Image (cartoon, rainbow, N blue to C red; front, top):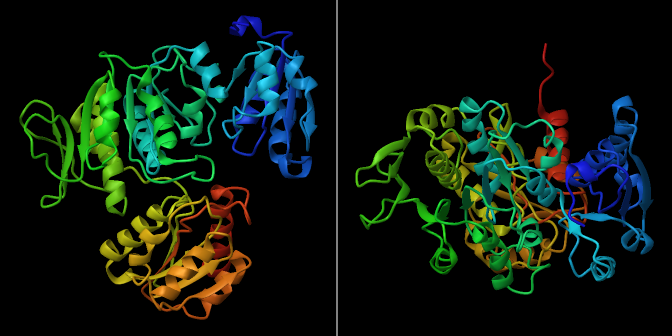
Length: 484
């Protein structure tokens, strides 16, 4: 069935995977508002999914949206919901190998995602960003600058904002910035509607090895971001990433690079950082032009993220003065090396989005190098293993003054590294409040308390955002002085 918005009223739509990130709820809301009969099904139970269920049911209370209906099938899937329906919207976390999806595809029932529906129903210019780390900061910086020129530009995708939440509000000329995960890109393989004007790959690092059998499969999914582009489009690659050499061979778009050091070849086009000058430069026509003058976020990795964003903005046609002025005011985003409290000469950082060891490494390096009198680090780390190699973390575990561990399958790997290096540690603790109680007994002025797990969070938390929010709430309740 080839579907358009006009076809939705009266159609049966199955939402597979409601989840808590907003994509499932947004898909259900969109199709309900447009008159579909929606079935929402998830293996999680109602109690866990209450926030998403409440959002959907609030739509039904709006008089203008009573045409559609919804039923919930929770704690299980029923095959009838997949073979007697007109359309399935799957959560990116659901593998295509699901027997329910296989049966649906045998019957010719289309399987889409919220992202593919958005691309099918709109023709807005798209700037898409993917990568193992840095993509959320990069898309947020791009959107922050775009809004100064295009106030109605939108940001969505893997950053926990489904594009279906704004699909009915945008105008055709409004640019849309999309953060895309490897799973979302896998669902877009062969999709002719996915043709970003600008596609950015921040980096490739080992991640999700609990889902991928090898790095090649992971990289192949990342490369899909460039698959639909042609010579009228732009591909932005990290020149410092070894994966770039092979990836660029498969790209049809015009290629531009960003780098943490000046280009050694005069033929390379893109943007680079000059560490000696502390600035970023745009190199498009033989003469470097200042692109970034001040970096408001801590860490060398964030300088690279801002540089990638600035290059994408320049390729989109934003003038360098606007890029310089807007990005120097960019404050970053929640859960990414977020300084959220300074109290009694102690700084507290929420870096809960660090879900791989390399992200924790960057956080440690960033605070140690740039935090002046606060360079003494109390590191809180540990969590769920995604079948990743933690040995790169070993060389950085001697930097923190103290290390506090949260229990989890990955924590056992970290403990092995600590024992090999003969480094003391506290824990592992069963819960975050126990960690904070332990930290309180050791704190002194000049410390940076860094919550950078370097792991996933499945065993104790719903996701990394829930984990970060819990950490911040506990710290604020324990350490912030009442405002008088």
